[in-house]
Image 1 (cartoon, rainbow, N blue to C red):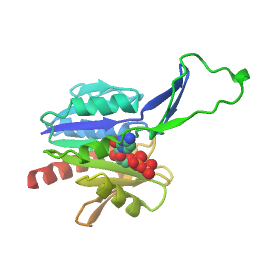
Image 2 (spheres, rainbow, N blue to C red; image 1 turned 30 degrees about the vertical axis):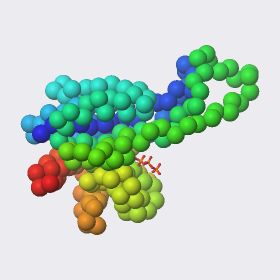
Image 3 (cartoon, rainbow, N blue to C red; image 1 turned 30 degrees about the horizontal axis):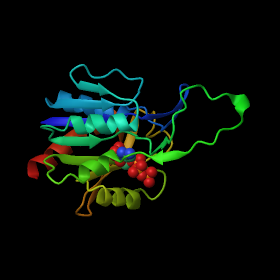
Amino acid sequence: MKFLITAGPTREPIDPVRYISNRSSGKMGYAIAEAALDAGHEVVLISGPVALVAPPRAQIVRVTTADEMYNAVHANLADIDIAVLCAAVADFKPTEYVPRKIKKNEGVPTIDLTPTRDILASLGALKEKKFLLAGFAAETDDLEKNARTKLEKKQCDVVIGNDVSAPGLGFESDENELTIFLPDHSSRVLQRASKRDLAKSLVKIFCGMKQNC
Ligand code: CTP
């Protein structure tokens, strides 16, 4: 099967030296890419800026901004069987980019923000979608409620939720605990484990779902 995976954060530039971003190491997305490759699948990995070595067998597309990630995803949809949107895409970008460094002595700047496009929702809204669509929900509160809202609103086939307020789990960590939310209202917990082991389980689950649909 052919996977498309987004990973890492995006950066939305304010001026040549400053940007808005999200916390994300990219480890979960890269682990899913490795696990899919190890299981013999093809992978297109669309990655924001991270300090990780890309799996050599993946087709890697490096992007910086949410707009670049959106365009890269839509340009790489041909023949995709499973799309896993794991990236922590910035929800807002500065309305205007200042092409010179904003100087401190000019006073505290007011930065006007514009929403970025939602990549996951744009795939969910595609009329003739042949691929399985998996989204992530990183939450500090009401994991189930927020994950189920994303599942429905973004028209995903599955949402993987994780509680990012739990100490030692999630961001930057090598471990995670995940809950899989499905449209039939069922859910399944993948207990705390390395991101590598969780990624292997996710790849099996996604492939099982794809074969059954
Ligand atoms: N996502 C995306 N494009 C965006 C924002 C989010 O593709 N512009 C995807 C993420 O990759 C993830 C899912 O949507 O798979 C949920 O992202 P998250 O940041 O948890 O949710 P948001 O939609 O940003 O909503 P909120 O800020 O209310 O939690």
